[in-house]
Every structure is written in structure tokens, then in C-alpha cells.
Length: 472
Image (cartoon, rainbow, N blue to C red):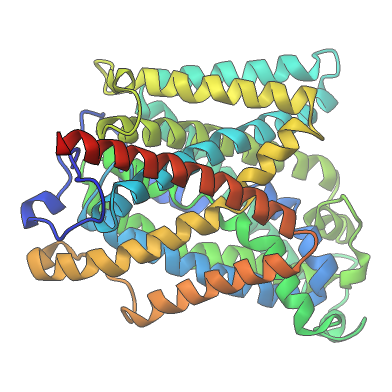
């Protein structure tokens, strides 16, 4: 659908619920999407950032991850339902346009694009810092340049290259989590050399399972919920597979439960093996646990894993941002020049537009990390909640339309519809309310709300312009 009417979306003809044939390549295989779904959300936020959650929640971080993970799982199920029924390179942006109106598709698409290209700078810089620690003769800016050039080239050549990179990146991350769970489980039961069974001592000691009460658990949710961002890319990538509907439904089914298991399981191992107070500020909880059970060079091992996770996220964000802006161009919401596709089905101009802004973000991060770039980062910090809310509202409206016009396309259904969708929306509203009351999270929410408001104003002005043009 490239000619959506201005204003609120109306129920559409059954045939128009199916995405028009994309000019993009269909080179992604099922194994690419499955591993992308598994590894897309496993990033540095888990391996390093989880320490902040443990500090505020103690062992209750397990509940924090469970709550945040269930919310992410519900969102992914909703998105999977719509993407399996109506595959599109713009994913939730296209769904929002169909269900709510052009302003919603425009806003979701551009905000998500902005989020990806800003976060891309964080990932490139963090990966360069690690690489600079290994090879200090190469300055940090040179490492950033190398990473950006390599992954730009990867995304310009063929989508198959992106798929292969992400497959092996994700395989390493998933393998690292599984190995950690095995070693941690053996340590809990005292099976490893020089270890004794720890039982539940560390879960019940040091102030109990909830040393800071339920307030700590809620603070933990705010600290970790955004670590689940990244799952959305698998539904964007599904449009470039040989069987989008089947591919996305299988990828979503295999991903949601396993990701919840990886996150909650690894947190349970961390707070069981060691007292939560043993975690050190600025040090990955995974490193602390591996050091304690005698794994040699644990710090360097995790550095490698985090490095791969960062490059994986950089690659996925460049891919996702290019496909999102390409989809916006298809619907007339971005310059038509971005629609040019190579013979191999790659939207090269969309890739270059995304990486160009990514380079600008990197330069701002290197030059003004505590001023200009910090404002940009805050401006996208809570955008994910806005996108998730649009996904939920879109699913509420499109599910009814699909049931009436093309029920056979519902190969993947949201559980307990519509009750769990409404519950997810209520949970998102609660997260927003809690962020307003949290002094650390409030600035991020307000800056993100400002960015969203700016995009909504532009979307509104476009609709007014279009109505006047149509009136003439």
C-alpha cells in the first residue's frame, strides 16, 4: 500500500491488506531469520548494562527481567501476527499506516529510523573503544571508520551478506549465553572444581530476595526494559525472505520463549552463584561470575563477546534503518530518490542515507559525547515505548479487519486477543508513568516526548497540506 489516504485509516479492501510485491531481494533464508530473532535482542545491554539493574533490584532483578521480557514477548507476538499476515519491509510503520492513518506510519517510521542511526553511533564508538584497547596503535576514530566502511559495504552488496554476518554473530552470542548458563548451573550445584553447592543462600541473604522491596523491582524494570529493543528487525527482514509469512511466524515462535529464557535464566544464575552485593560498578556481571568460578581470562572472553554483540547490533541497525527509510519512500513519506534498487535488490541509496546520518552521529559522539550527542541519545531513549504502543493499537484494529476479510492469513495469532493486547498497553502506560516519577529516567522520557511531538507536528502539517491539495 503506497497510496494511503490522509487522515484516519478506513477498513480496506481485502486485497489491499496484502503487501504489494517488494522490489527488494528475497535472499534471506529461514536460518537467517531464526538466528536474527534469537540474537537480535542479545546485546551489550544484557552483557554489561544488566549490572545497573542488579544494583537497584538485587536478586529481584529476575522478576524485573521477567516482567520486561513478558511485555517484549507480547509486543513481538502482536508484531509477528501482523507481519505474517501482511509482510512489508516497513513492518510496524506500514501496519500503523494501514490501521491508524498516514500520520501514524510516518511518525513510527521516522522515529524508529532516528533511533537506529543514533544508537548506531553508540555501538560503533563502544566497539572502537574495545578494539583500541587491543590494538592501541590504531586510534579510536580509525576503528570507527573501519567498522562503518565494512558494514556499509556489507549492506551495499547483497542482503545475503547481511544475513550471513548476523547468523554467525547471533550464533556466537547465543553460544556464549548457553555456555554461561551451563557453567553457572554447574557452579550452583558445586560440580565444578573448587566449588561448593551454594543452594539458595545468595537469593535469601544480603537483605532477602527483594532487598529494596517491590520498588527495587520496578526500578529494575525501568533499567532493563529497553534492552529488549531489537526484536523488531526480524519482521523487517522477513519481507526479504522467499516465504515471508511462513518465515516470520517461525522466527517469532522460536525467538520469544528462548529469549525470555536466556535473559531470565542468566540473571537467575548471576544472583544465585554470587551475592548481588558482590557485583562491581562498571564491570559486567557475567565477568564477575566467570571470575568467581575460575574461568581463566574471563574479562577478555566477555570483551570478545561484547565486541561481537556491538558489531552485530551495528550491522542490524544499519540494515533496519535502510529498509525503514526505503519503505517510507515507497509510501511517499521520504524522498523518492531513495527508491533506487540495485540489480541484486539492495536499496543502496537508502543504505547510504542511513549510514551518512550514522557517520554524523558518530562524529557528534566522538566530539561532544556529553552535550550535543547526549541530547540526541536522550531524544530517542524512550522512543521504543512509543513504537510498541503503536504496534499494539495497530494490532487491535488490523486483527478485526483481517478476521473479516482474509482470516486464512492469520497463521500466527496473538494470545487471548484482545485482552493481552490491552494488558500490554496498560503496562506501557505504567512504564511511562514510572519514568515520569523517576528522576534518572524523567529527562530521557521528556526529551523523547519532545522528539515524538516534533515528528507528529510534521506529520500533521503534511496531512493539512495534502487535504488542501486534494481540495483543489
